[in-house]
Every structure is written in structure tokens, then in C-alpha cells.
Image 1 (cartoon, rainbow, N blue to C red):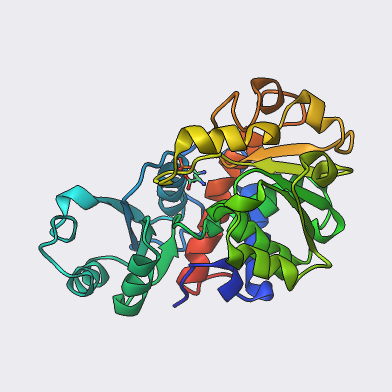
Image 2 (cartoon, rainbow, N blue to C red):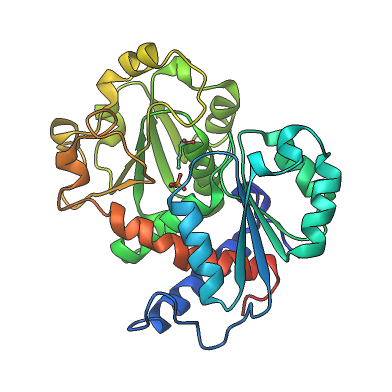
Length: 310
Ligand code: CP
Ligand code: NVA
């Protein structure tokens, strides 16, 4: 079995295999209805158990759809309904029970320690559905979207991130190193932690850090951003948003990107903060397509976890 926790832990060939499989499955699904099953039903009889300790719309729906189309079933656990959530049962014992009843466990949490503890105690694969440092399923799916729309390998494109140094950026940095693509980051320095700077410094040829978004976005093929304040980001929100004021993706800033740039945002978005509606609803935005691709790519992630990738 394979876990899917951080892009840095998965080898490049496996990541490429996942993308290739997603492409094949997506093409084959043309004209099928949402709940029609993929003909081969590779996960028939298998159960995905998912638990969200934080809000989710896309990840919840796309993993559900992915598993159902592969022929399997899904059960959602709510933290506040579990003994674990009330402090009445250990992670070790909870993991044992989840392993008896399910075939894959997907967890969205605000604790890296919890990810590690579940990993150490589960007998079934674990998928990270977003943690403080990582959003690997999102970023792998975004690579799929970028290559699909640009019809080029991501290593031949210039990617630019404007905004917070958060979990999505962390996974994007790991992806830049794995897939060898150029990544320019623009963010106020004080919001980027040492771990990110260390990664940037040891991959200087690929990754560059800017405090001026205009310089970072210059000639970019792909422009990405995310909320200034993430879920459970325990900062002074008012102050943080003020510090990020110059980092909004808007009509003026985007003039510095390539003419045929594409705009991605993992969503949910705070329109008017990190991005204007004009950009998110504009002709270069691919955000809805990006959201749809989540379930196509996650099908292949589920197959990878159960060692069923062709
Ligand atoms: N992009 C993303 O993961 O969205 P949700 O928080 O709605 O799952
Ligand atoms: N960085 C965001 C991503 C949401 C999908 C958060 O953690 O809230």
C-alpha cells in the first residue's frame, strides 16, 4: 500500500504515473453521467473513510465522486461525533477500528502530529486532504490542469505564486523541485517561515523569492494565489490583510504576466482581497476547470494508494 501525504515523499515516476492515469480516465469518461461507474470498476467493494476536522467543499465532494466512479463506497466521519474528538479514545485505537472497517483513510486536519500518528497506526493507506503544511492532492491536480490547458510539460512553463506562504505554496514548492519547474514567489517576507526560505535557498535555480509582486509575475505563464488568511490561521487577520494589500492579483498587476497567462486559485476565494472578481471571472481564469479536475486526479491517487495504477 502507498500513503499520499506530501509530494516530496513520492517519487517523480509515481507522480507522473498518477497524472497519466488521470488523463486516460478523464478521456474515457466523456459522455458519462456523474454517478455512472468507470467500466473497469477497479475499486469495487472498497470503502474510503474520510474525516474532515476543518471545512471543505471541493475535497469532500471530489473524493466522494472519485471513489464512487471507481466502483467503491465512501463514509464520512465527523470529528465531533467520534470518541477521539471528545478525548475519549486514542488515535492508535481509532486507527485500528478505521483499518478494520475501511480500505483507505483520508484526513483533513490542522495537526501535522495527527497525520503522523495516524500514519504510524493505520494498516490502510492514508491520504492527506490538507494539513497545516501540505495540500498535495490539490497541487498534483493543479499540475494536471496546467499541462492540460497549456499543452506543455510544466517544466517548460513559468509559474508565479502571489500571496501567503501557506500549505498550498509548500506543496507547490515540493512540486517545483520534483517536476523541475520555475517558480517565482511574491509575499511579504515576515509571513514566510525559515523552512520555506531554506527550501528556496537550496533550489535557487528553480525557485525565486520576491517582495515586489510586479517582478515576480513578469512573463509568467501561470499565476496562482490563495486566501491571505487560511483556515485556522491564528493571526491578527486585520493586520495580516493590511500587510498583504499590495499582493492582490488584479488587472494592473496581471499586465506584467504573459498575454496568454492562466489564473489558478484552489478556492475558496475571498474576492476583493487576494484577487479581484474581474480576474477570477475573466477569460484567463481556469478556476472552475481546476476544481473539476480534482476528482479526475484523485481517482488515480486512490488507485496509487491501493497499488492498482495501471
Ligand atoms: N481547494 C480545496 O481544497 O477546497 P475545499 O477546502 O473546499 O475542500
Ligand atoms: N490555504 C487554504 C487552502 C484551502 C483549500 C487553507 O488552508 O485554508
